[in-house]
Length: 100
Image (cartoon, rainbow, N blue to C red):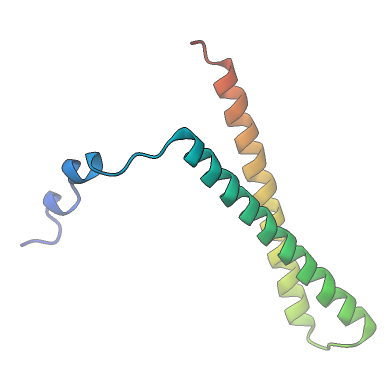
């Protein structure tokens, strides 16, 4: 069989329709859990960056590269979180403008 045939990429609709449905409450709970985990991960990255920066300033560690990498990682995670927050607010506002 040719690996480029369309049969390999067509979804199995029977499998899709047999997936268990989740309730609105379960979906909200899952979203809230994922959001809390993401915020916690950003917070942990910020704390690690602060600790390494402080240790570098005190002379406890000499690896400037590791401190800079940790700082950049925390910065990128925070910027990504802020951008996602903006997109979620925009999506919410768009949904609120829809007429029912």
